[in-house]
Image 1 (cartoon, rainbow, N blue to C red):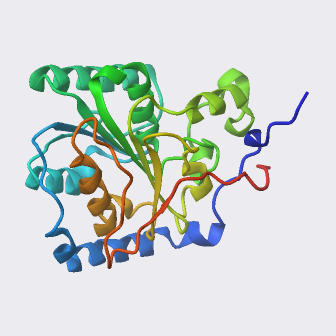
Image 2: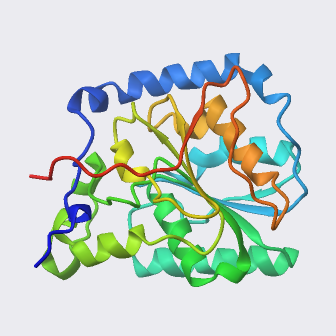
Length: 265
């Protein structure tokens, strides 16, 4: 059998980054308050609906700062109604599907999905099954390219066919497949929960990777992440273009997914 390098997992990020997560997240929050001025020039929205999905073990209110920001920009930003995100289940599938149906039918317009970490996996799979209802997908620190490249993987009660996530090759290949809608992946090389290489999209039309410098748990209130989300959501339908970071933001755009290096133990 020919070896597929995509089967190798990059594994979770270094333990040193993991240990610094909470301290850095607090710094990101303080920095967000100090950098509100950076968001005064972001484009305002057109009123279309945005569904925001939280990360693993995160409660609904974890996305409140982002939803509040988007509402200020005139989007109809909604929560997921998941409560605490306890991981993949039939209940989760039914809840987010019902939520999408409700928001779409209320507006009669395509819905943008913003997913943080595991919430980004939910967003991607929702867009995969109902692309006609989805305007775009934005993920934040989401390891769709390598679902096992995260410290959270050991806590998720999911063993497809009795295999650990790093050995569930069919699932990993399915999650990595490109979406039929515009897709932006926001990632950080200093993410202490998810390895950044697990967040990278392959080359493709209307697909992009955008780098920021922040912690994983700080992405939900990081000023530069908010700027990128606002910029992407403001794109008119059918007029997608790559993100171009204005100075002095420092965000960098990457369009190529590097080969995995190393394997999970």
